[in-house]
Length: 385
Image (cartoon, rainbow, N blue to C red; front, side, top):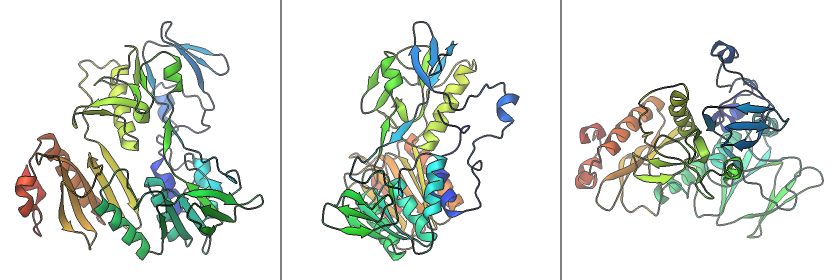
């Protein structure tokens, strides 16, 4: 039911906050003429209330019924809301929409005091942008370090040091218990007894998958992982597909079944289903190696494949950690490369390494066998191919 045409959400926690010259329509994915030129009927402020797979119809909230031959579910996810005292105060934000980003951007001014609840992608990116805009930022994180759900302790500790050097304060192994103020936020309290003066707070503690429509239509869903799809992103109904955050897909490249919450995954899966909906023959399985990225301060970070902890074991460091130009390779118990975290100030360089890593993951190269070489200065990762 958004009032905007499709837009890219990643800039909302980065460029949109940093650059006040960005206008509301700058994140739009397509030019206005794209839709009529490509015979796409687009409706804003509209929401599908129900699907009837047997009749192949979608009913809108206003009662309009649309028939379909094939249908794509791309309902995404919703930021988790903290139902704490003061959560509805002016100055307490979630970040999902352009309107959310506009509210946060208006709060960023030199000397403003801000709190990011959560040390994941959103919390860290907002803390970075706000600090660069002159705000004094505190990040409250329940784990022992940032990025704890999807990066190794080495990466988390690196980010902590980097952010602290820029003036960001962290409260780890702590949780927010309430937001204080009369009408407008003036402070945030935590479980460990901290009372943080604050002019604004941004909550980024994860999302819930918007799978209700699929479940009510009788499609097979996993409550935690989303709408079950096959290698072609087809649901349990042969006429319905799912893509993006909600699609629990068989990851051919990584040999696992999961869902991925990231812009590029949604874009790539949407393109794959789009080819099918447009009548493409001989569709190939969706096999993109997972890709996640982030920009903080002057750093570009890219995660390829499976980078999740449990620790620094089974990781190999390549490059200069202290100089913030490095790649951490993650391998399985047999030494086979499973993923990598790439950090660089040079975005084209990061992209080039990302492509190399993707190729290495696909051919299941054994990096453990060459650990000593990989750790040497000047070693070329491309030589592993």
